Length: 388
Image (cartoon, rainbow, N blue to C red):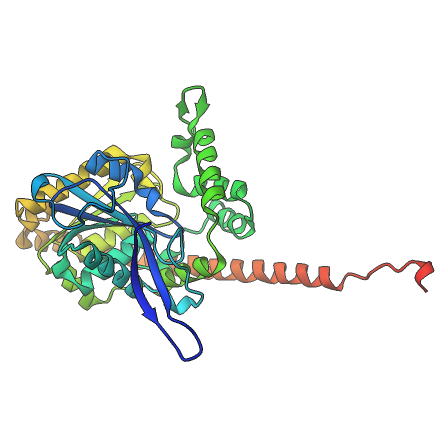
């Protein structure tokens, strides 16, 4: 199996421990595309994009050379992989070994392993955090950057607080079987409208449910160490103003794609990130949920191909992002400054209220669970008279 050894460390008491990253390559060509999947996902989640970009469904034979393909200059080679903590990659036990910086270094090490000097980097959800961190760390290795259903990490990972998301969170914590997890994943990943569409004589929900259960059963559900580690990576992720400036001024194109009905990553933060990365960034909003890459694969793949072609043709940043000229932007800010400030202040206040409500609900839930478990342990045991 194709693996990239990222780190190897040894102590006096222990043998060298390797962190191995499992990957697959598809297609052939001088254009390289690195796909970075999100939280609890595997490389297989990029199926619609792999097929759309390369036309291939089977991975490349690893006996073939991994470098530039001079005979397929017009083609595209894609590499996707399992992040540490998931799939066939290593699962370090210490959650401190999971940060977006460390995982970005994993991705860079994989590029080195493949002999790629530069790639179009595409990330989804947590993968978009890793991709943006990679772009800030090594902008010279990035041909273009695409961020799907992205947030800025930390408190931005908290979904919009309503009864639906609270219910999903509670059920997620209690899910123990592939069947229970599959039901939740469908609700989190897709819109209700999409799931109710008919595929032959069955609904898409029924078809996807069987696929999800099969995948979770064969590959296994994410381990506790992997779950806690990747959660730590999301929660501790942050892009500083300096890092944002490095991405914005690096000269490559940035594409942000987001589903309007995403219940995990709020659209507001994607819009705000696009504004911070002007004039390099273009925002594409699609009707879809958190896994918009599956729900709207044709539109997503078309946008990715447009980004790749525009990068090759050295498209001007302002032309790419449709960003207004500075004089026009200044006049717009002058006219709308007061209302914009009012909306921003109002939204921040509502955001803080959401955090407070979520904190109290989470504290109440965990106290309730702890009390229930304690009472179960302290429940008196019946002793029959014959044992006295």
